[in-house]
Length: 156
Image 1 (cartoon, rainbow, N blue to C red):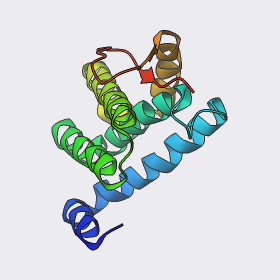
Image 2 (image 1 turned 180 degrees about the vertical axis):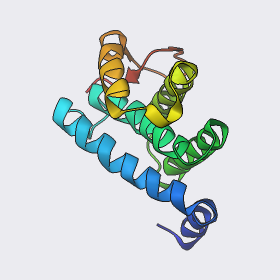
Image 3 (image 1 turned 30 degrees about the vertical axis):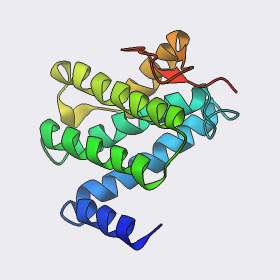
């Protein structure tokens, strides 16, 4: 990672050290669960990757909402996950897929937020729901595809 990228990352995480720690914890948890559920595709561009990105954002939101407002958690989640894509660039179609699935996770969290006090969220709320969403996941084939509301993945 270049010095410039390190400075950009530090400028986001240093003002929010607890959010940064929560996000790191969310990253580890989401990766571990995705590896168990989708061992062949969690680390590729397949369906497991779609699940992992959405779950990652749900977990960041869940952990950050326990110590701050949903608005601040959403803002930080969007900024940190977008920055991840900038710091570790992929091919354009892969980036579109990752950003799309991140948004699905954030949107899903915000959708169920009104029905559950944010202090009582649990990981299982997201794992089970996102596994169900996998049944309707779409294959992203070009940059013009628009699968609003659906997880997307690339054919391997």
